[in-house]
Image (tube, rainbow over all chains, first blue to last red; front, side, top):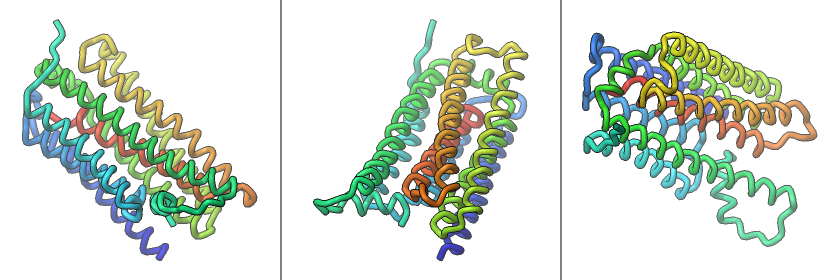
Length: 98
Length: 204
């Protein structure tokens, strides 16, 4: 039981590290010389970050074995955080000083 | 039983008679999750404000972002993920009664935290010597603010992990709830960095 749980979080850790390198690759591949706005890169990177955060919550923080309310609240955090960022980005709304 | 599972068990526990220790454990279990959710809400607000400022001056943010070295961001993310893995294993070791292994894993997680802060200071030092300071432009306001407030959380995490080490080192004072509370705080520090890495270093 303990061994399988440890193996499971090791797999999760390896997966999260691989996603981190994938995010870096996506960013590095796009606009090596001059950075330009890219909805595809931004959407991909924020979505990958949201997936990583959910795995950290579910597996490392063991929300997976927690009550339904905690699962819903933590899923809500992920959706509001990533969804809010993507909504602001997609809407083009901005604050400009000066 | 994990602290997440015990949060649920305690939520439905209607036992009228509880010892002082049980009450304290219940308080700690619920409170760490309230704290984590509040911290996530506060950081979400920071991130949204960052995105609004970014939307107002995309060219400036993109050109400033290009002045960062993403290798620092990647290394720091991998370091924190490794430290999260160590502290998760520390919890499993403590549950299994393997306290020596748990202490080593907790010490490893703290060492990763020290490495994270060290790399962050080197990164800041390089940027400042390149003339990229807090007052340079709006992007660098957010870069220094978000990374510094996160480092502050890492430093607070050292206090949590020190308590975990103290608890693990003495048979008479071991509390699995306290150990798991410290671990949850440390995972939260990792979780927040994941989004900072995405929006400050990688997005376009």
